Length: 251
Image (cartoon, rainbow, N blue to C red; front, side, top):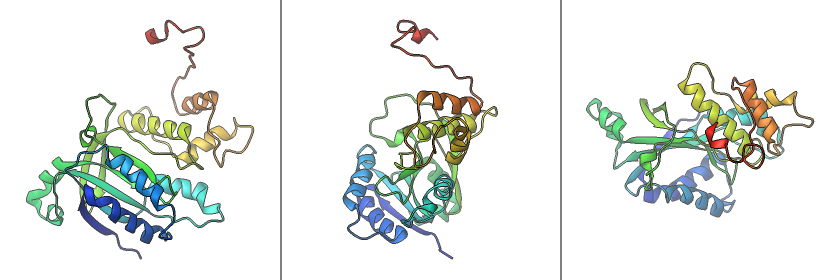
């Protein structure tokens, strides 16, 4: 049985610590794509506020990645870990006492700004994520938000944001990720829809596709429309370059 290890660190020290935990959790060689991993982490961290603190959980069981793992990665010749790592973001300093002292729970919730799952699909490690826009240095924009909650170190915390995941390059690419994010948002906010796993998208498209779905080669516009229709949307394809060039904003 693997026990979950919890680490708390300022964001400026998090990248180095995350890399070491990645090596231990995913059994990586110390020189295996670490530059790409470091750059990917920095790409996100450089957009976030400097005063954030990061909580790192490992190993973490993520249902989104486990679906891809059992659908695809478990059958590959290279061995992939079933487990992930989860990093959670907090505004300003937190300590282990915030998870133990009832008087500090409200402060912990106020500081919570979301999370991101790191999966063993090197170097595309960023999986299921939801980060509040207030975590970013540049946040003068509007987004569609829904309320998500997680159980972190025994404490349930809530955050508002929009779901995101990077492509892993094999089981999901941009189209599958977009469908998942749309269904996650609408399925979590409205009772008429439900979130879907990547395997559900593949199953929905298997009868439509003329070739195997994995590894993914991406989806056509028609396949995206078909999948969304199967999941309850009334889809219609418009083209700015054709009949609706000057009127598309009015639809």
